[in-house]
Image (cartoon, rainbow, N blue to C red; front, side, top):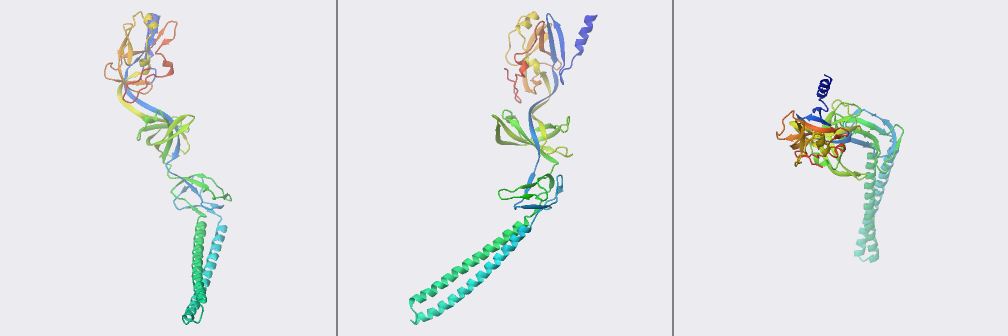
Length: 406
């Protein structure tokens, strides 16, 4: 009665993992663990981490130096294109405008003066020409008058150029004065403010950043780094699921928008950036969050699945000795083992996609519910699996192809 009860308890333990169930059956000096072939979905995935960012983020700076006199936006402020969000102290630039206008007036006055000189030189040259024709003046005096006209014409051109330059200086000073008023370039929300009222900003070498404005936080992106060994399996429009630490247990969805070709190498590890579009209608996702992503690179729905442990299992001579059976001739390619009338029997199978724990069976060689051996524990030793099973799955399955055996 006690032996029967133990057998019933062992038969009741049928679930290990999401789909497969395992049992244990005793034999002469050996305990056999089995799992059932099931029907379900197999998804091949690639895992990565990335950083959330807004689809469009604009850095708002200033083209002129000065002191912040007023701020019209703060963190999380919603702004519209053209809305004034900051002002610089304009007094110094206003003085530059006035100085440029004074320089223009002086240049125009100088231009008027040299025009009068040109008029006088031309009149003198005309009288000199009449006297020279009547042979009342020497040739040298005629040449001198002619030179004075050419010199006056050159001075007029120079003074007019100075006047044009003065007008350009005014325009530049006015533009600089206008740049003391800083407006939002796009509609969006302020996600960064880098200055305070009274702070001096210098725009001598590069434009200092005052604000960062995100165009639309209801549409986010994840910038993920994919290892070079996996980048060949990632393509545009693939489905992606990811999680963030702020919402444990909640999965967010997205799709691959772009696989960038520029590599990044850190400590001899090469990765490629992949941009994932992620809808954010509830605004839960924030820029800068770290996301753990799973890329679905291949999928098979409603297929026969066998646990990878069964594909890894290879009985040893000790197992055959414990089961009191001769070792069969090994087959080629992937195979699983069944326990039939207390004896291990190999079954060749064709495999397809693998998700790391389950592998698709191609063809109908074994029906759903067939139990296959995953390990054998021989009395006085550790359970027997395939060599290297503890190191991971030796079947490296590519989408649509059989796994590779180590």
